[in-house]
Image (tube, rainbow, N blue to C red):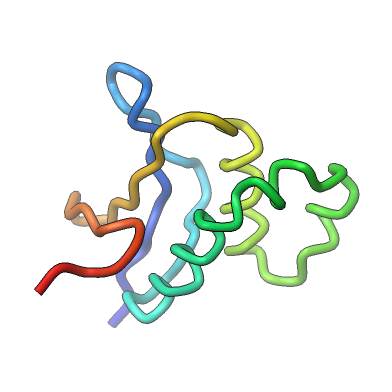
Length: 90
């Protein structure tokens, strides 16, 4: 069963949620976390390189991170649940 995952900019009130999903299943969380961890590299990419990322999910993530290069980022699913940006607790 799919669970769409979105990035959230926590430095805005109210928090800004990405327009496009960064994942479709909870098993996509490791890739999303890796992209957040690699934000410095992603935000330095030229725009044309972002559009060459083959996965639309990773492209959505890259674009959101580029739009919020220094903001605190969260992950929220379509049901409003928040997920850790590093690793799940427990």
